[in-house]
Length: 406
Image: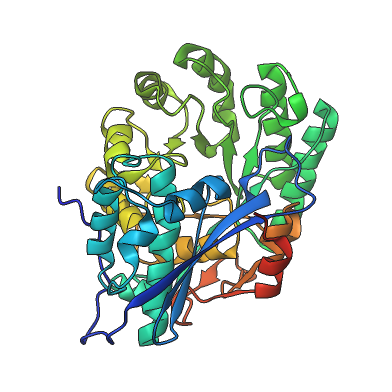
């Protein structure tokens, strides 16, 4: 498999541009809560500029200070370079080759994890830049949209320090999402395990009770997904609990087991009464190949701000299609990443939903204030095809200045 990703598909030769700068912005909401497991409380935003004045914006879902170091820290080894060193002076339309150069040139410190997350922001910014340069939306540069709308699901993560408060908050937010027009929701049911909200340690029976309450609230016709955020250590414990969840008709169960434990994931995927979804943390096509071929999941969830960017996510989507696996991208971030996710979905037929963090229902200030996406939720619960150049997102630079930290 070639290391390079993909480059924009254009009907004519692109304009001659050269990258002159790679800006990094680390953002943090002043009211962030370290006990609230939400990565949308901070952001790492990359701006790639050219000498001709065209620029692009990207974002990754990772620790912003670490991501900034991956882009800016100088290197003394041919395979331990900073991403910025590898980009200055390059042709921004050569995205596939720039990804290959960056992947190899940072391999001593990268290959997986944080460097690939940072590269995701850089690569996303390149797609935005190229789209703006030729006046086309990113989905057109990816080969063209194959449909005129996509379906978002409302991704809900309410607070609550007691079982009753948490359950009621889940139901209230689900009810509001349906009132907004969403035809699908994903509810976090995480009152134990590594992602336990507010230090809760509720029994697994309580998790079943909370999920049942949400299903009663939204009725039988709304698609329901559930994320338990690595709640169980092994397949047998997981399967003993979720055997009772068949009646809730879940579209998928997300991350029931730790992502690295592929053998246990495979056991769950084989025997669970609903499809199993994984992939939010994974980087590169190679990790997804293991997830799909060894883990046996039915739904793959690449995150464009973690997996290696839009091009790498597209490769993962193609791999999933070859294996008969659905794609439902992960995205718990601002309008920048949500927009990139939507463009990917418009060229991916086997993507029934995208994750969408509704600004009206979330606590995260950066989601509400940082960027306005072109995407509009229509009354029928769909998002129409975007038409603006690039990602079609407008960043509020006053907000960037307000929340930027060292």
